Image 1 (cartoon, helix red, strand yellow):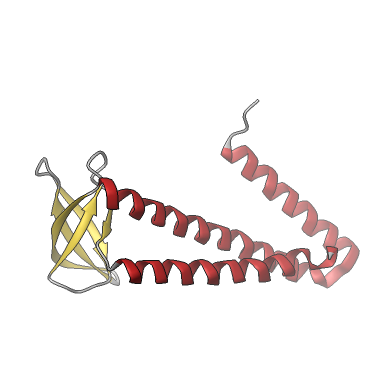
Image 2 (spheres, rainbow, N blue to C red):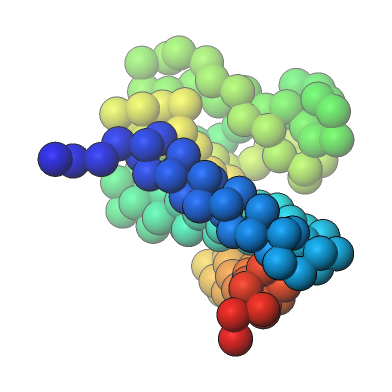
Length: 151
């Protein structure tokens, strides 16, 4: 019987809550470190998943994407709002921190709303590698905070 993602996530969360309750009952104040570790662990896993997803999207679009020029039309929050047109002439939005008047954007022809900013490959690889290293170190710290009692 296949398990859905939400079912697995709910079971993992219940197991974490059960573990935190056990630590609270048996070890008292150490439960604060366990709860903080679990919060960091889940946030860290989420950021790792987002980094990997963005990397896979970049790799896919490098081979199958269409590169177009996007024009800055204004600001949106802390970034800048750009518009680009797909092959059918439909405009799409893209948010980027850069303030350049125009940027190159590569989008997926099958799903034109999925796009990435074209960057120098070495910079992208270094940025992704450093992000993953930092995320793994945070995950290790949070795992030690959460499960240090068992080691």
